[in-house]
Image (cartoon, rainbow, N blue to C red):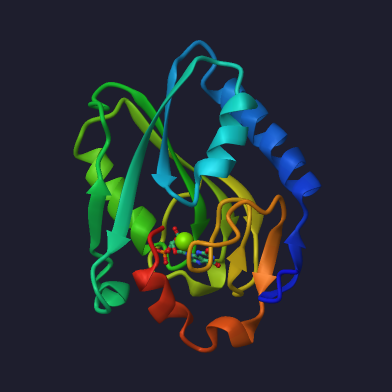
Length: 190
Ligand code: XMP
Ligand code: MG
């Protein structure tokens, strides 16, 4: 049925358990406060939708959409903001929510940008972490799963816009994206 897919890497039931655990930790850490979760479109939407329902303190949410600048962006880490936040984050406790951290360049850029807007606090929750490919150190306050350097889809993550709706995280067959992994990612809206 999904001929591009190799195998399940993170089953939906493991994600469910992780989301519950992350939600519990976040609720504990921000007890008595109000949280603004910022999802990075489009990959984080499924994760964020589940995570906010596992959080017991008051949550409001906003979204950003970003894309990388051309091919050189993979080295420069310059990110273009396609959709900015609707509201100011000044004085707010902000939790940035990402589907996956690979080189770390996108997250690093986002954190630098959001810090200049003077939030009361700024933390990061990431479902999937590919540490082998990291090029810049980024803080991950609430990590989900560490995964190997393979291209994954499902649970919000896509290949050419497809597979976001799969309940499990799958490994894409390497022959599908070949050796063009990093080139592909650049054209891909997050
Ligand atoms: P960096 O390298 O800046 O990239 O940390 C983060 C963005 O790259 C995309 N990405 C992936 N998307 N499967 C995907 O569907 C993957 O295995 C993958 N690895 C990186 C993603 O858009 C993420 O926000
Ligand atoms: Mg993507």
